[in-house]
Length: 172
Image (tube, rainbow, N blue to C red; front, side):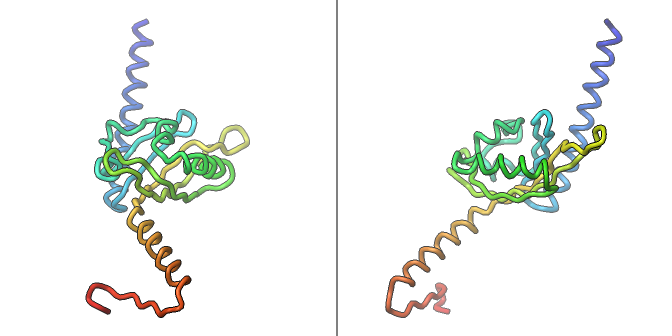
């Protein structure tokens, strides 16, 4: 009995060390990329976050979903099925993926993110099996708002016979 407790404690200690190494790796990636980094184990669905989740998503890292299903609940219901499909396809046939979707920010409503990820594979028997995903999330809310404004202006311009001249506040 004592031996099984010692081995369980050792395994738990090893898991803690792995988590700490991944969090250090994620922190270095965040410093380089300036957004959010996400690590997900495919078999368990367990997720590790890196970056300023409070300002970008309105939640501290401690309050972020720790499993993929919980994360999907924060994604817009209009986008969640597409996100799941793209990640599922990438984990079976591609190595990388990119997807844009809306996430509910705790205090600011819906924000747009672009997620780019890479799937890691491990040999099991004679086949490679997907084991984990490492992804970067970039807040593209401002870009999406600009695109919407340009689309609205293009619609106005297409419906008028008058000349349309766009300038900045300085008149240029």
